[in-house]
Length: 273
Image (cartoon, rainbow, N blue to C red; front, side):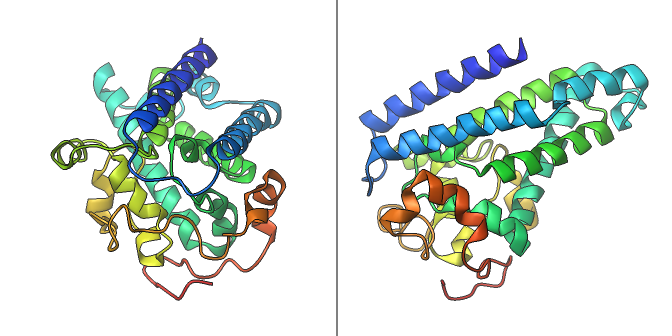
């Protein structure tokens, strides 16, 4: 059931956002859309296969095990069911925000994460473009969080579906009226909000780390409302990965092993490499 729900939501959101991008695009793309979609979606399918093959225990199965054995915080406190679910989803979302910050702050982790930022355009498929190493590391962190929290299987399923759907939504190359964007970003990270994070300007790259809830960036001081050059004028990607060879599938997989991981420590802007 879990796989069916997640796959159904994935293709539904992909179709919706892809259609929206055709009808009302926010920016003109700079490289071949077909090639990017094939590479980014191909990476997503590779990541799914890697997780299924290399992870003997997935978060929902661990949640069930924790419930049976009374492991984790929420399995040892008396809370209404709805409150436990809400608290678990919010805690997991905050943890993902902090994990994202960590992947920018630690040079070794930035090596892995920069494949996501090396995309020279920003659309729905950027939301599923992550290196397999990052996906596997994230899975390990998520398993630890589920065990520590004692999150229920329902909480984990809701969070996983929400994270996947909002990641594709807030990476969309879609046009939203400013008034609508201002309203939506009070409750959800919007494409205009997250696009700032994909700017080639380092101080903008180190902002707007949230995926679901927009509040963490405001609470922790990493929020930036708009890019300095405007959404049409900003440059997407990383300064050191702009050649045609950097867009190949093979190079995407090799990025963690290439070059120096400098230039992105949190709150310490430096000139681009």
